[in-house]
Length: 306
Image (cartoon, rainbow, N blue to C red):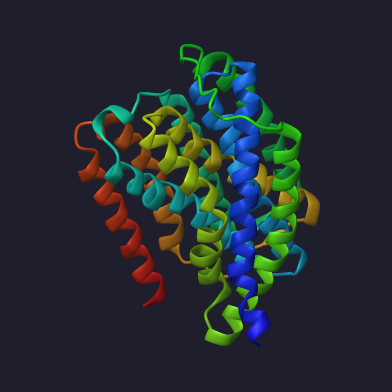
């Protein structure tokens, strides 16, 4: 029993280390390629920080733990906005929040509505998974070519090291960490008698969102708000089109249980819409808007466990 209790923290540690190494390797590569700041956030870091969600989701589905898998995606997208972005705004200053393309925000909102639609009909078919995976590279191309052409380049030569070594360490840590993490979540769910859907939305989502938390806060503190926002937006888009799409493509269609309530889809959509509000008004009083985000997240958690 004691050994099983250690699975959860060990899994979180491996996911955090793996996510950090993947992001570092991606940043080093992007610096050498002279990629614009927001592109680093939405493509490189956004994708890199979503890899824990991908491996955890696939691992959970392989163990027939559908509620944990789906809950982790829902919870991760909500956490990225309300908790991580909210906390970052509370800790930052007015100059850190930069204007980015609202078109990327609209794509993220569309993905939230699409996921909510699947939750309502109760199933994601293999055909839809193919469409979602197909849409992802199309979005990336359009965003890079048309949405963000005017963004400035980022220059952070302080990040040095081996791209291959960092990426290799990251992948290994995430692959093994995701397996251990899921076993730990299953143990917690059984011991505490907490529904797996709630475990997925809360604990699983927090564990897989650790890379996003570290990258977003660090980006804001360094005054690189475009990277931070791009990370959140990119991660949320990847979570649905990439993580969910690939997971269904690999494991077959997903049939949702009735464990997820209407409030989960409402919070998912509202939090996505909230990003647009933050970009329009957040610079005027970041601490106020960040505090509202945090209050919203913790109120949702209280509702889940009440």
